[in-house]
Length: 400
Length: 139
Image 1 (cartoon, each protein chain N blue to C red):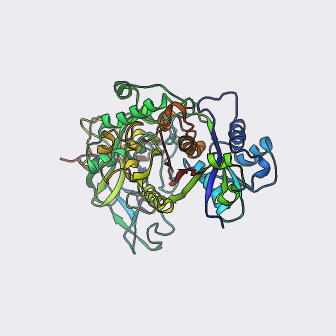
Image 2: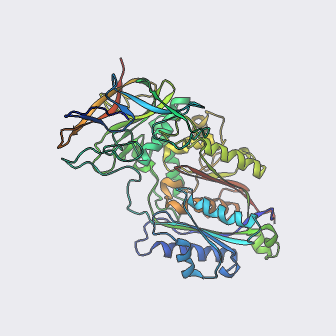
Image 3: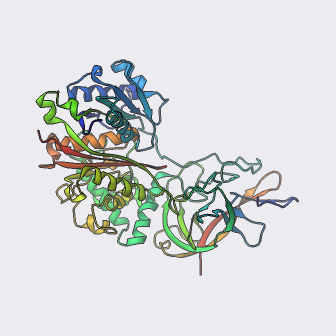
């Protein structure tokens, strides 16, 4: 058994529109760059875990054929928006189990131009009989008739529910959260969008699902991210430079949603995040007050608010005050989504759970350039996928 | 199940947990006899306590709007804007649309009292009419 896990090399591609390249190209680019970043090759890898939701399946083996087929076990994983984090955690578990010394994780997606996610169903054609289908015996589509299945609408309700419970969360507050992330994105050359918006521009943009306007929704785009993880024991045999740049994985946690009364009608993204956060803080032996930066899953502006609370960045019920204090701005006391977040950096689903770790590592290594959070030593990366799955990793700067 | 009418024209509910032929329209749920957890779909076992015995219960037809969104952009064929919400019906959370209210944030607010109502989705060639439910502001 190995006690410690370290990230040796990590990379994300530019997020955006990559019309001339497929998922295999993008994943391979991220993998080869992560290997080079760690100073290792495919020959050093004992395991590969790979995620891609919208493709044809078997992305891990497809990538091997581009970067090196060595016969190692491949795990193709699928866990909604937590797919990337699940791939990373799969490689980590292999090392923790003692089966591997070094592992590789990659997540990739092509989503540019995909449009609205969730919702739909085929409408009844005139004249056809109403016939029951599915687990609710529905005689026609229910999306739009019995609530909404669309992601912007689901997460709008998540944020509005928090506002109903604790107060203070209105349209303008949610738009201000988006204003922050778009402002942060201007410093991130790999973001899909790096344009600053005024609050008026955000509030007056196209409404998608109140209170989420278009810039308050995560950007569908193409991208990949990959990471090389290594056991603490193996790291000791590597060069001092590799040890210096390695980032410690102090906590790696994956949770699903425990049963809650309302979870059958509106996904409960809170309980599993709170559970994951609590476990992660215990594993790492650090508290939320010790985090220098946080990358959390702002798939919509309305989601970011609830996760301030779920991750313990504020007192219970205090997310609105936390935001209004300026804390989550990059010059605040608890910078959140300095990458620009999913709203501007973009959200190529399976890549997201590794790309947010890349962002944190970049700061902990002191390599984040213009957007560097000075002196960053500890960071947290969070993703959640509906269904649900929540991944949290806590990362620490090397003492070497 | 719920449909017992044998003569045409017939009315069928959009979903099988909407009951039209047993008094005023109402929703029903499968309730776990061990822990009381309620489900609108069938379950092999209770997701809360793993029990396998369920009974059918009626859901209160009045409730409080706990959260909502006003969907302005939806899949093709879905009419917008519409209000989607979660209604606390005496302790059971119900998902549904709001109707008979202006779909804007001046008229729709969390905490408002609402009640179940039904409306027609149309009639097919056999003369069967499909009925859906929604919630409307309660006086």
